Amino acid sequence: MTSPLLQAIDVHIHFDGLIAADGVTLDVFPEEFLAIVGPNGAGKTTFLNICTGYLKPDKGTVIFAGNDISRKTPRERTQLGIARSFQHPQLFIEQDLMTNILLSIGARDGFWNPLRRLDRPAAVDEAHALLNLFQIDQHADAIIHNLPEGVRKLADIALALALKPRLLMMDEPTSGVSATEKTQVMDILINALQEQSVAAVFIEHDMDVVTRYAHRVAVWNQGKIQICDTPDVVMNDADVRANVIGME
Amino acid sequence: MIRKIALAVIAILLCIGLFVFPWMKAVLTVALAKGIVVLGIMLLLRAGQVSLGHGMFVAVSAYAVAFGNEWLGTNEMLLQIPFAVVVSGVVGLVIGLFVARYRYIFFAMLNLAFSMVFFSFLQKSYRLTGGSDGVSVQTPTIAGLSLEAGTYNWVLFFLALALCVGCVLLAFRFFRSAMGQALSALKTNEVRVAYIGISPWRTMVVIYTLSAMLAGLGGSLLAYTTGHVTPELSYWTRSGEYVFIAILGGTTGILGPFMGAMVFEFIRTYASAWLTNAWQLTLGTILLVIILFAQSGIWGLFAPPPPKAKTPEEKRYDVPAAAGD
Image 1 (cartoon, chains in turn green, blue):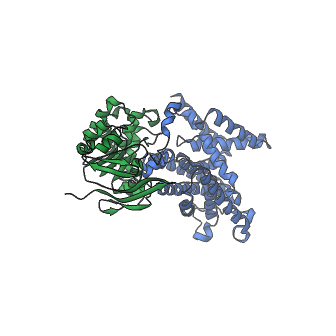
Image 2 (cartoon, each protein chain N blue to C red; image 1 turned 30 degrees about the horizontal axis):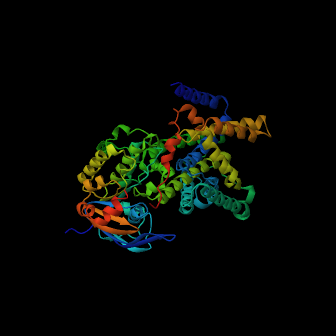
Image 3 (spheres, one colour; image 1 turned 120 degrees about the vertical axis):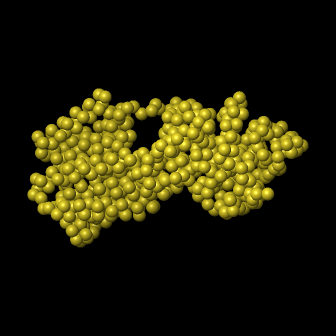
C-alpha cells in the first residue's frame, strides 16, 4: 500500500462552544478521489480550512507528503502542492478570466521578476488548454464580475489546477451548477484530475455524484468522521442511510 | 482616433509653448518630477491602497540630494540622483516592512504619521537640517560639466523628460508582469492571492519599496529644479497633493499621472497669478468635478471607457468565503 499524501491526525477545533472538529483522523492517498458528505454544520468546510491553513486547529497534526504542515501558512501549503477551490468562487474579479489563470501560472513560476511578461506565449497556450478542458475558453477575455456563477465556479477550480498541485481540495464543486450539467462538469473535472495525476478531496451534497466519482466517501457528523469507506459500503450503511442520505 | 489626435495636438502645443515661453520649462520640469512621484502613488492605488505620506520619500530624496556633497563627496548629478533613489528605496523598504501589514484607512494614516514624524525631525533638527529654513541645493555638475544657468535648466528639463520616458516604459513592462497584474489581484482578493502561493505582505513590501523609489526619483528632480529643500516637502498636505494629482490624472493609464501633474501645475501657476487667494478653491472645484463626472480622470477622457459597472445581481457573488460551514 502506498503511503498517504495527506494525513490529518486527531484534529480538534472549536468556535465559541461549537465543536467543528472533534478528533478527526483521515488519510488521503495519491491520485485518490475522496468525497466528504454530511449535514450542514458537521464541519466539512472547517476540515478543508484546517488542511489548507485558513484555520489553525486547537490540537492535532496535518501531514502532507511526509512534512508536518500544521503550522504552515496557506501560501506555504499552496507552494507544497495543496490547491483549493471555494464554495463561493474566489477570483480576481476586476481582471479577465485569462489573466486570472495566467496569474496562477505566473505564481507557480517567475512571480518576482518585474520585467517578465505574464502573458508569455507558453503560459497563454497553457491557460487556453486548461480553459478548454473546462470548456470555458470562450470566456477567456471576459472580466470575471461579468461572468455567470457557473462559469466562475469552474474558473475557480481551473485557477487552482493551474498551480499543478498534487492535491486539490474542493468545497462543493457542483453547487451552483444546474442538475443537468452536474454530470458533465464532474466528467470534465475528473478527467482533468486524472490527466494530471492529482488527488482530490471534495465536499459534495449530491449522492449520485459521490457514488459515481469518489473512490472513498467520508461521512461527517458533528465534527467527527462517522464512517469512511468505498461508496458501496457507505451507501449501504444503515446509519448513514437514515441520517445522511435521508436528510439530503 | 479623435482621442489620439487630441493627445498629439496637446503634445505639439506644449512643445511650441516651451520654446515661445521659456518660463514654461520650470513648470514642466516640476510637472514631470511630480508625475514620477505620482506614478509611485499609482502603483499603490492599483493595489487598492492610498498613501498620505509619500511626501516623506520625496523629502528623504531631496535632502539626500542637498547633502549629496557632504555624504557622497561628489557634486555630480548623475551620481547624486541614483544615491537619492537608493536612500529613499532603503527607507521605503524599512517602513514598508511595517506598513505593508495594514490596509485602507490604517495604511493611509500610518503613512501620514511616518511622514509627519519625519517632517518634525527635519523642522526641529536645526543644526543638521537648517530647520524650517531648509537647505539650498548646490548647482551640480552634469557628467562632469559645470553648466551656466540657462543651459542647466534645459538639461534638467530634458533629463526629467528622459527619466519620465524611462519610467513610463518600465511601468508598461511592469504592469504586464505577474507582479504588476497582482496589484489588482491584491485589491480584489487577498485570500486568493495567498492561495495561489503568493504572500500578499511580501508583494506589498516590494510594491511599496518601488513606489518609494519612484517618489525618490521625482523628489531628487524637484530638489534640483527648485534649488532649495524645506521640511514642507514631507508635510502631509504635500502628500495629499500627489494623491490629488493621481485622481486628477486617472489611475487606469500610465500617462495619467503625467497628464494630471501638468494640468495641476498649470492650474497652480495661473490660478495663483489671477486668483491669488483662491487658487486652492479652484483646485477643490476641479477635484469635485472630476470625482462627480469623470472618475477615470483626465486620462479617462482619452482612453476607451472602462468595463460596465456591476449589477446588484452580479455583486451578490463577490462575498468572500465564510470560514465555517
